[in-house]
Image 1 (cartoon, one colour):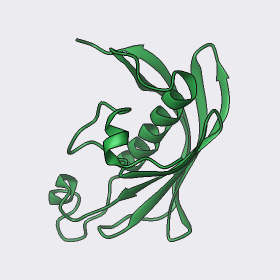
Image 2 (cartoon, rainbow, N blue to C red):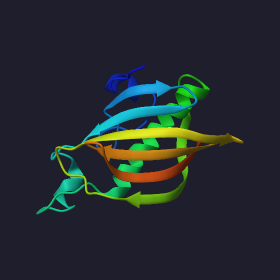
Image 3 (cartoon, helix red, strand yellow):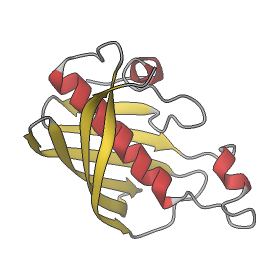
Image 4 (tube, rainbow, N blue to C red):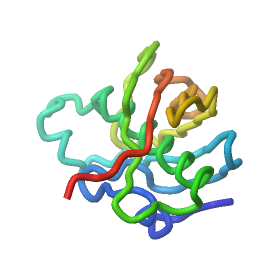
Length: 148
C-alpha cells in the first residue's frame, strides 16, 4: 500500500519545514513500513549546517524515522488519526550514525515493529542511502492527546 504526500498529511500533523516523509512505498499493518525522504539543498537547515559542506543533521534523520513510526502505528491501530490524537516519540535507544547525508540524497526509511506493550510501540529502524546504512535506532512512541 503506497501513500503520496496528500495521504501522509492526513496522518502526520507536521508541515513545512518539518514534514520529513515524502512518500510511503509499502506498509504491512502491525509489522513494517518503508518510506522515503528526499533531501534537497532548499531545506532551511542547510543554511547553517554547514554552509560550506551541507549535511543533514542526525536528529532530523531520527525525526524522519519517528514520523514513519507514527504513520505505521496510526494505520495499524485505528486506521486514521482520531481528532486531537497524535503519536509522540517517547524513547530513543541504540542510535548509530554511519554516514553523512547530503543534498540530492534520497533516504530510504525502514521501520519494523518489535513489540507493543501497554500502548507503547517499540520499533527497529534503519535509514539508508543507495543501499548503504546511514542510521540505525530503536524508537518508542505512544498515542497522546494533542495540546490545544
